Amino acid sequence: MKDIEIGPIRPPSESNSLLIRVTRGCHWNKCYFCGLYKSMRFSMRPIDETIEDIRRQAQLNRGKKITSCFLQDGDALVLKTDYLLRILEAINQSFPDMQYITSYARADSITRKSPAELKALRQAGLNHLYSGMETGSDQILKLINKGFDADIVVRSGCMAKEADMILSEFILLGIGGKELSEENAAQTAKALNIIQPDFIRVHATGIKPESKLGEFVRNGSFALQSEEEIVVEQKLFLQQLHEMDSYYVNEHIVNLLLEIRGNLRTEKQEMLSTIDRFLTLPPDERLMIGILGAAGFGQLNAFCLMIFCLLYVPCAAALATIRKESGSTRWMLFSALFQLVVAWAVTFVVYRVGLLL
Image 1 (cartoon, rainbow, N blue to C red):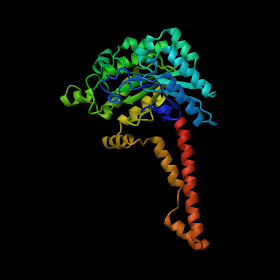
Image 2: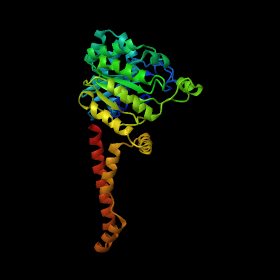
Image 3: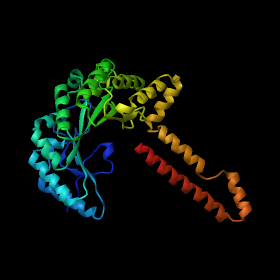
Image 4: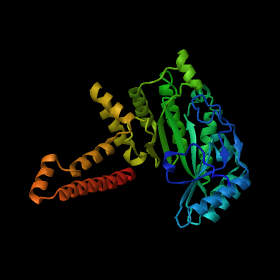
């Protein structure tokens, strides 16, 4: 019996979702900044094979309440609508508690579907699309060989919203380099103001050396921005976004200021203030934040570390006093272990709650 097939990637927000692979690789696979699927030939999985994986997943998760599922790999909407409807039916039959079925979707794959097809998919349970628009600039879309223009980006987003789907748009800060930084901020904000997606998921551009864009960096035709320059670009981008009911989030560890997140209607000014505070810090403090940020250490991590240090094992002098007064080494060790467990438990709860805020 074959193992259940799992693809190489899913959005960070789908970390707890059931993973069902419906394609292998990316059918476009020509973007100059992306090297994820370069060694993988694109193919659509046979539907019987995929449905068998769904049934086996149901057996493995018997007794568990599974409420979310992500369809892998790079763009499930490239599949014919009838194929997708059969997959969605199998998922809903095998997992009766299912509430969210999500997928990556290229903008041009969305626009190839008719409004009726998108609504049928939505009614069948596909209710959240992750679309990598990257930028709203025609010039940059051409530079990175994305395969569509800004008009397709806007039309696809509007079509998804009209079908009553939750829409997450992925944005790449720094994808225009130094030369096109302002262009990227202005044109991307312009497109998003029209689409008004549910989520704007911001990533700082990370360029793999083996990618085509990496080659541009080496030959000097593309100038990478520093982390601080990307923060400045993010400020310009945020300033030009309308106050709308979209949730803005820095969700990837490569982003410098992970704490910049919130509803654009109610928290936009607070996010801009956070950027301004960073930009007014002395250079050495900005450098330290950059180093810690690169390691994924943000404000929530610092707060949790403080709580842990307040609650964990007492100092050596306190342990020695416990040993002397109780006359028991076991009691001393128990006290140390008990406080360590309490510190870990409290910190864990605070961290998990903090991620939800």
